[in-house]
Image 1 (cartoon, rainbow, N blue to C red):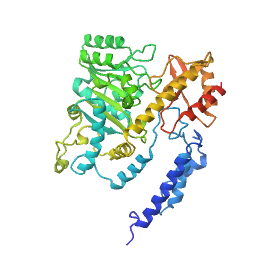
Image 2: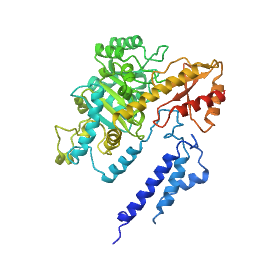
Image 3: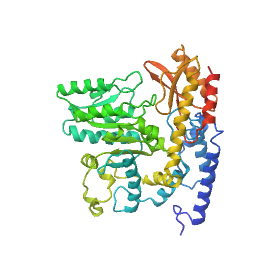
Image 4: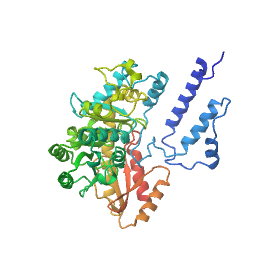
Length: 459
């Protein structure tokens, strides 16, 4: 008897071979593909909206349709993507996800798949050790910085304001990522209880303003629960004064969280370690391997100094799980986060790190730091441009001197219409600025130089 959900070995091999051929062709086409083509036709959208039928479809035809949909988008995996911090999409991670989904093992608890949990835990231990968080530290792989930030703030709230959430206060830099505010609100902190800390002329958090806010809240009988600093802001890539903020957190006994989703893994480089000095004093650090390790979107991480802080926030017994027990050597991830059901994320991180070696990633990060500095110098030398902030990491911010906000956006559209690069804009100090974000492992000097030519030519 034939079971259509269980294809034969020959069918699986044929389908797998077709997928691999398409994947290789897609990667080979990235250098010449347009940087944006997010204009799907009405006819394509109508075809995609069709519900599944009762009868089998054609595998090749369905892949054709999905490929057509993928091509109508920003080229986030290509060398031309300089708009936002990308998710690079290493090929080894794609293969890892294929195998992980074929195995389809459950890793929320240790007992069902102890060796795979050990594999994932080895990557997390490597991350914790990278930041010298100590033997009681713990890591988690998440879907991204938003969920990592939520887990950290819930842990901070549980430690400092359990039962008193209405009195809890969270402190975020004015240029901090919006996910920090969203995480605090999701954790039950009212919007007007989230304190926005002023920035200095370098767009970094001002510790003296943070001190005033914390002292005022303490005098008012409120509970400072969490200070959120940035190791690489979204707007400009600026790194907050991490040591000074850590000292304040220690002085007042406040949970210290560092959003290192973008910049944290520059800790792998000598320059990054110098720039991030003080991050090792954090209670928790958000990391996004899908940014700074070039992995597929949906690969986030959180490292915390205290495993017990996560347990206190998220541990929950369930009678139907009694057969699975608890282990002392390896972590039950379901007791450390909101997730019970979870995919096996460890392989997509473990395989490329072991396959390519850490030095390959370090070299890429150093190259991006060099390219950003070169782009900054080139733009700074053009008298038609304002380039007030030297990049801490790999984001360069600039604007046309004397131009209105509308003129900046028109200039951006001319740049992006080239189809060879994709930049973005932001608003800083009430003005529109353009951004170059250099982080794709496929972006090298030739593409950055081409981008600079296009920027100048579009003025």
